[in-house]
Length: 307
Image (cartoon, rainbow, N blue to C red; front, side, top):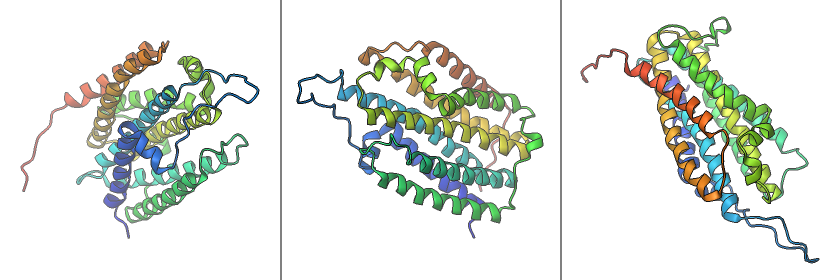
């Protein structure tokens, strides 16, 4: 059988790997999936010039989307790293495994449905999608085996609202993610327009445009997955120790994202893009992150001597 600790560390490792590749080495990841489709269309034989298109701009936008998606996968890995430690509430470990099994089952279903989209570009190879299905199925099996070994704990839907000393900071983080995740999943085009990205995507090849919208949708889904993980854990393990671990991991991820957010100012300058939502988004993310960091750093703690 698979222990809870082993199952959690599998997701910890995957979150770290994918987070690193998406945020720091996106070209390497695209190479793994055989995606190199940023060339702009040429003029037609009738002499009609194509819409303005810039290869570098296309790559910059895709890499920026990869970065934001990678931050969310990294957060998932950080949450599981926090829960994989010795001394963590066993119910918290068990229910987190169940949630992630459901998350990857959902990703398989949603991506499978997406492949039937008549607009699916030929330049996005299906082999990478099918490889993901195999990998994610393995994750589901590992998670369910570890969940069974750890007591088959299910979320307590009557106690999904976090409570205790660190309950409000955790809830603030969940609300922050929901405010971005829900629009990205259900109102993606409207959110792209709200952040002024429509101007950036003028002249972009259709397959690149399609790919960006897929990345943004999956980023939103991972945001919702992280919320589900935190609320499910808090519902069965509302003790301060467990919730403390959650907000510590979430806030450290928030700090990472704020650093990433700051480099977007350089990208916007180079692309000539004015983001109308930048100040509002920064204030929201910074405020929630500061609130969470202040909550756990202000808590009394005792270090035990190592044996």
